[in-house]
Image (cartoon, one colour):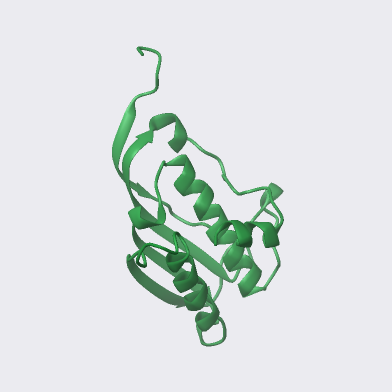
Length: 146
């Protein structure tokens, strides 16, 4: 159709996915587990808008405040996220790095995620988004990512 938005392919880069909600309010201030769950639920929403799956993720980098205390939680959440796409399929693989930082903006965020995603069949209008964070309770978001 001549009115349909153009289809694109290439690579999507995020600069920072943080646990922030409306008016940039930090979700679960200082709680690494809740923030990580929220960030991965947000990543699910982004992947959906890109018509991509977890197997299309090429690389992830997590910036973690107090990495000696919080790093194991973030690593476990990442491993669970990549393994839970489909139980019948092997684990999705992507390059992964975790970097310790002294702080993030906004303050009280303890995790920030950057991703690089291969886009095969995305629509250009899907890429023009403003915080596609899910508007579901954290416990429901965690269940939906299993």
